[in-house]
Image (cartoon, rainbow, N blue to C red):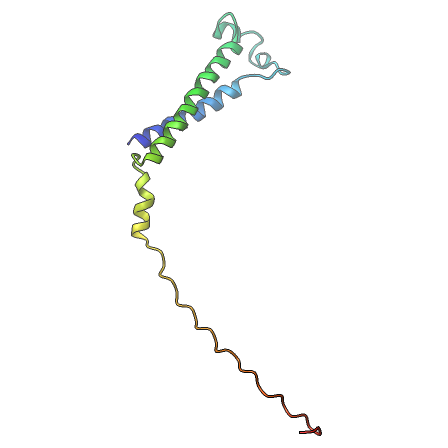
Amino acid sequence: MLLILLTAFQFVLAILLLVIILLQHGKGADAGAGFGAGASGTVFGARGAANFLSRTTAVAAVLFFANCIALTYVTQTGSGSSAGLVLSAKAHHPTRAPQKTKPLPAPVKKSQPLPVPGGKG
């Protein structure tokens, strides 16, 4: 159950990070012009969207990486619910029995040279 909750939270954090990063504008581009010049300054406060979005990105990134570590810990310790899925799948689908190999052919004995017609023999 814990693994499912952590995985769902990881998915939400990944989508949130994508949206926050895509909302930010680069150094050379002015994203505010596309939305009505300086309107973003009134929505995010006097300092503008850059400070709000950069802090939100930092918080979301820290949560994302902390959740990654938590997911790794849960899956490695075996307390997650799907950690046993691999083992149970192997129990239900055993590997194939080793196939019998064909016996090697008997070694070839060195034979006498064939007589040459018209030769000494």
